[in-house]
Image (cartoon, rainbow, N blue to C red; front, top):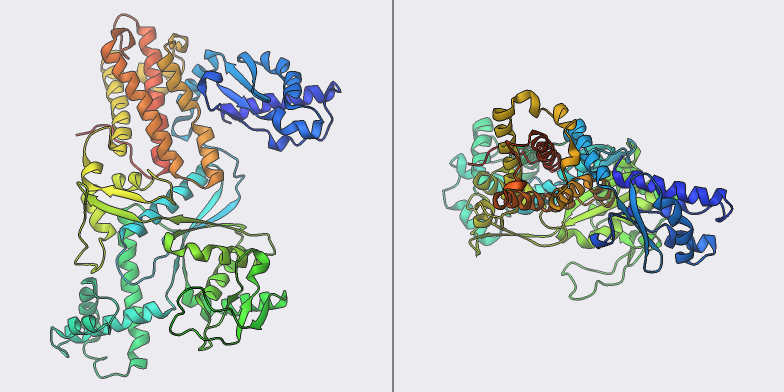
Length: 591
């Protein structure tokens, strides 16, 4: 339990005491009470909104209610002062020993410090990447992959039972276009067409995918099947080449993701879902609930698509669930729309036990969010919830200049090229230095330089500095004196400098950061926290360089040295715990 959760219990006890005394009525909305750091640290260590949120039900002015509570809170264990601010917020100042005790708690818990049980083992499905299997991954895919993977780890840290899932869109027009592009490459590979044949088709727009990665796939197909498909009709070779292409592209995608440390528990197939009757079941369920009708949609706003025509369609009553318009489920050729298949897929997730579903999508799918949330609401009778995290674009720069596209991919820089150049840890961390819905610039020069302007270096350097101090301590005091168990018993009352206490306060906030970030589904908060924690440690390090009284190792005062070593080691543990959540390896030395 975090320190803030402990003091929330203290606030609840104060409220209960006033209820027992007849000063407050029973049945107050206690779930609305929060305890968190005040916006201005000068106001105290902990702030609670208890009087503000209970005032209405108690039929009292917030400040008057706060006056009833402050007496109990001022005398609570560990509280040195209590005050009322503004219309009724209550601020508490904690005694230094409360903060110092967190150092021992961190040392006892190790990297598990910060873990929470708020999830209660609830199953959560996190679906991310789900890129069409039409080629190697680009950096935008990589951002979604990191956001999804870090979110999954964050939820696990908070006590949820998480399933990481990838949905393969292997049933639509795009994989058919991929198969046709592969066929054109294949004809060149077996010598049935001249070398310039593919380039001509690409220039004419007759093939959709022109990246060099299809050359390797075509050569592999030629090695397996020889000239079997040269004179075959399209309806003969298309299914075989589609399956071959999807298999090859998924292997390529899986290799790209492995380079970033991404794995999945479940890989779901759209084609298998459709073939298994999943779409039919979902549509039948909507029909059974009276949520389908035949109608003609209004023409789309702006310029009309060339193929748009006013025609009767099977429509889902999405507007009943918050969408702007009702949505079609069948195309003009009678096949299901992508939306129908996506509805079936999310119904399948719900039936597998996931009431909470989180999808990580690219920003270009922003217009799709409301209809999917409407569909999930309709299909689950309101029992299922879909949260969609949209990832904005990543701009690749090198020294401020745009990076040229990849010849291998044809139209973009591949994820693998970036990871091979900067490393997995740098890529993962930088992808979380902005909130997912904010554009992100990735400058190769900045992310590889060793300076405070490089956030991943700044955090890793803090951890490496901690490890350096511990190595010197072991050499001086012996390994036994520098163990976590030994340091947990150090005389922590010697930690009295304001900079030391500020660092401890920041570390003590780690469990609360985990809970708040998990509830908001915002893994970038972990990267933000780590940067703030690293800054406080670097500040303390610098002060020790300037003032010998603040150095971590004091040969003339072993008790003070042990206390400061406990602080340093606790800092390393919290940084490592945070990096572990976002899938970054903490380094012990920087070269």
